[in-house]
Image (tube, rainbow, N blue to C red; front, side, top):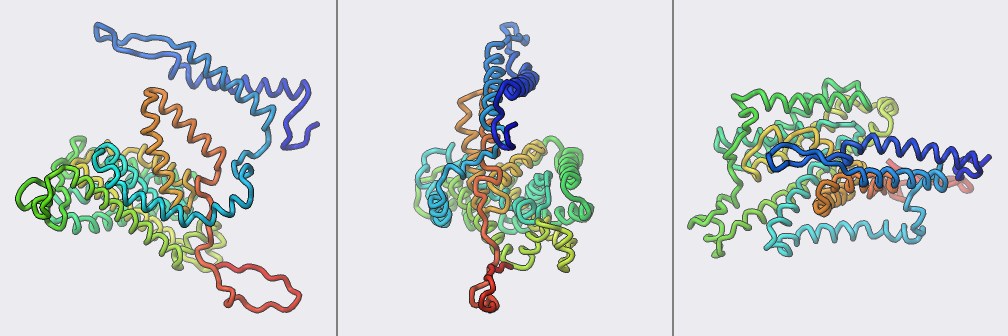
Length: 440
């Protein structure tokens, strides 16, 4: 009998591996028979014509069978991690370079408009990546720090966007006044969500937050007198550079600074605007983690019962986590509204929540740098896979599964304690007693 964690040998082990691989192949056939085996195209007369691709389907099923068979025979019961392939000195050196990597990442982000000034597509993609990075920072407070499984984060994103659009249109206020108001409205929505879910955890909390996101979307869809219903809200005011509009008029931004007018000026301004908002969100989150409320979030994430035993008010802790995360989501929603100039309920579906949640989990829950890296990899990688046409979702999904298997704790999973005691503050130990590290 092979020991646990070792591959199975002998005829019985091989037959068991073949049986397991056949089951995986049958599951793959059931999943892909309609997705890949059949294809609908528009015929010459305009009607749909069904064509078959059984060769591609057979190739995928065979690849699943062979891959599962090799996996079962060679790596069954073993934990796969790329950390084992990297020597310990190299891991220690890489951990020490994390600060420099973050600085290089920030320097590149600041230089993107200069490097790609003539490429509108890359500038728009950069704005999209930074927007989702900011959303990831906000959700990281709720999921990564407080450990509250929130699948309805898009609701706060929508509340911020619609709050900005309605206030800017009805009251004629500027972007810088509407931005904090949108954040306050989103934080209020976060508190409304927090009260009903104070006693829920895990899957039940996820179901309730998912329902809250759908409730907000349905309200936006059906309250036509206020939100415009499925038609959305158009003509949302654009932000200006301290009162200077990005137009070709004499009082515009270009004429004031003696520049040749270019529509790219507004895109560059929007990029630096969302980058500044994301950096402020990151800085506030890092500062909050070192405060008592941040350590209370982390204690709540580790063990709620022990958190209560320590005298921490879990009700206040949960509500502040929901409110802070929702506020930053509202800021991102306000930026989305002013950038697009048009919003509708179709922009705030569950897919947005799932994408932001995937960014937080794949980046490493609680890791700010990991969120930025995951947002860049996921959104940028999705654009790279665009050439695969109908296969890009399959390739992209397979890449995400590989990341989850190889890096189960996220792309950037290493975390340091939020607060550490200085050596001088550690109480003296009697001679001969072992010394232990103390953390707060």
